[in-house]
Image 1 (cartoon, rainbow, N blue to C red):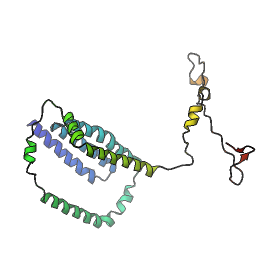
Image 2 (image 1 turned 180 degrees about the vertical axis):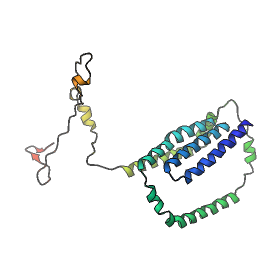
Image 3 (image 1 turned 60 degrees about the vertical axis):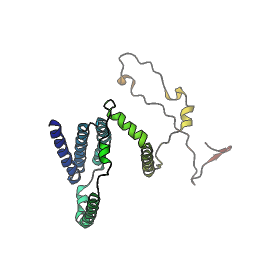
Image 4 (image 1 turned 180 degrees about the horizontal axis):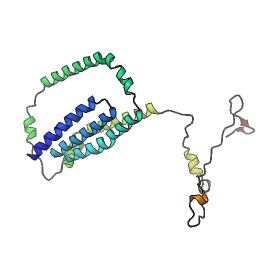
Amino acid sequence: MIAQLAFYAFAAILLVSAGMVVSARNPVHSVLYLVLAFFNAAALFLLAGAEFLAMILVIVYVGAVAVLFLFVVMMLDINFAQLREGFQRYLPIGATIGVILLVELGIVLGGWSLAPQSAGLRAVPIDPNVTNTVQIGRVLYTDYILLFQASGLVLLVAMIGAIVLTLRDRTSSRHQSIAAQLARTPADTMELLDVPSGVGTKGIGFLRPKVKEPAKVAQDNHGHIGHDNHGGHH
């Protein structure tokens, strides 16, 4: 009885929070409602006996994705008045797309039916000595290993594409020189001091690390690289 009441309570809060995600005017409030929806979905997984999925939902989606969304939305400084200006203009297009999606969803639900072998699948006995995490691992890495690897490749391509699209070569950026780092000596970057006891930063001041600037290439008035008597100037 208590489990049923908890299920209906978590399910009701989940539905309300999911509706508020798409209906809230403030994007920050939408992300907060999304976090609430994730927590209630994790509670439903716990009631169903899938504790591993519940923890993954909380750690990955709430701890990483939702928090990332929240920080991005807060840092964008969105102008809500400007966003609402084109609402009336795009309302017919949005309503048309919504009606089309609703009709397609009705067609899918109308033609959906249970497979004949579904009742037998639900009656498959579960080994009580095997935990939920082990069962998911066996199914995921045995029966669906190819799909799992394919999804990993898709995420890898998406990550590389995001890096390529956002990468900008700026002239003011400082690039790393592996050869210069390997060739430097401790004396070039480190200085040993004999600091008396009880003397803080007020006595010795702030010491910044030694930075060896790379040699600058001389240029003439026409923008060409200057040359010395031996050829190139490095």
